[in-house]
Amino acid sequence: MKRENIFQELYGKRKKRTFAHILLKSMRDIASLFNSIAPTYDKLNHLLSLNIDKYWRSKSLKNCSLKWKKVLDVACGTADFTLQIAQTGVPEVIGIDLSEAMVNIGKEKVKNANFQEKVHLMIGDCVALPFPENSFDAVTVAFGVRNFAQRAYSLNEMRRVLKPNGDLVILEFSTPKSFPIKQLYRFYFKRWLPFVGGIISGDKAAYQYLPESVYAFPQGEAFMQELRDAGLRNMRQCRMTLGIATVYYAKK
Image (tube, rainbow, N blue to C red; front, side):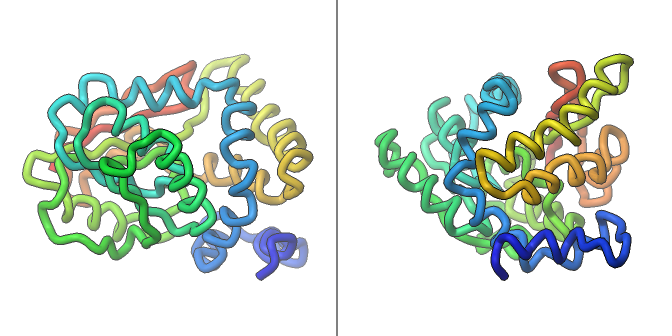
């Protein structure tokens, strides 16, 4: 499906749909969506977050990665988080993502950083991770779990490939709760972000997806219950930057 048609299909005006319905129907198009915005993805991420996304990734890893030897980064995209993990001294990091274009950009970044021996990227689906049980000291996801249509299956898969007592670290957007930050954030996220993102990427519809996906994602205790249901334990969360992002930690 052509990129300009993806969101005409997903957000068509003929019939109002819930976001969950849209996402479940559209998983076959998620890779196409991210393929279409891959060339401007990094630039827009850093611009629209004022580079705070780099701080969120760094903080989410603080005091975690020193003991890890082998890490799987799910929904790795262009490998920003994958590389940050490797730069902490982890000997082996594998990144996996549905989008071939994102992975190809990530491979170039890995090469430019001279991390080819430590970082390996591949195309794959988180509902069927191509690894044996008990393979990784940690599994990480940065700003990707809200895109999982079959989230329960994906969480179970991530638990499966974790070693006993292994770490799951999930960094995701969340929504502020306090006035006036809540209202300002909503305006920025639902109005300004699609406008600027559309101008730079040439695909405004793709940047309508971001706020819709964030507001549809279960946050806080609701998501930690999903982690419990997947058989994980010792859940905790840390909200950052007035609640704009949240990192979730759990153990196998």
